Length: 114
Length: 111
Image (cartoon, rainbow over all chains, first blue to last red):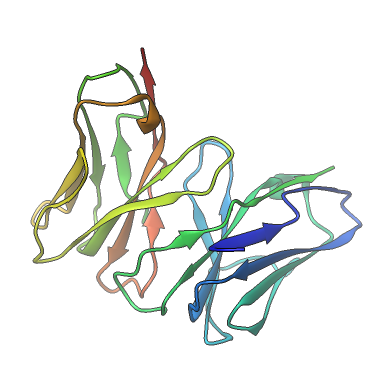
């Protein structure tokens, strides 16, 4: 595998379920990101991890819980979500969390909350 | 604050040119451009830095007017493969090391 991979690609869950999204990067990067992409809205940054430490939490509700066990893996744990949380969730990585870095995106997980 | 992109959508015939604009109300370090095809990940096209020069990518080039906090993406002699949604992302001075994305411009190139 090369680049940034995400699993699952599609997920349907009820509001009472607990699920997790997984992201893995094979680029040797030290920073990883979660974005939310909703229809007709810009990409919204959710979380940033640099060297496994969370450096940015963009006022995201606590029903979204990120985890970064090492610099290659990033998870987004989901619980008691709302229908408005349905969106495409994109993971990205950069060599570091400094400026002027090209973002490498994964293909995303299409989440539907019923 | 998110940058504003224009137009929201454009349809071209193959071989025609297009310009996509990105405007910010904040002072910027840089502007990034990405393209996303339906069902795929956004792909980096180029970055324009404060104090830097115009950067090109094959027949796609861009400019950055630092005084106006505006960037324009130029697509010349468009090809079918250019179809997709184009996003600008801005790194704002005083905004931390993060990208703030615009709402995107949908581009469709037809025969």
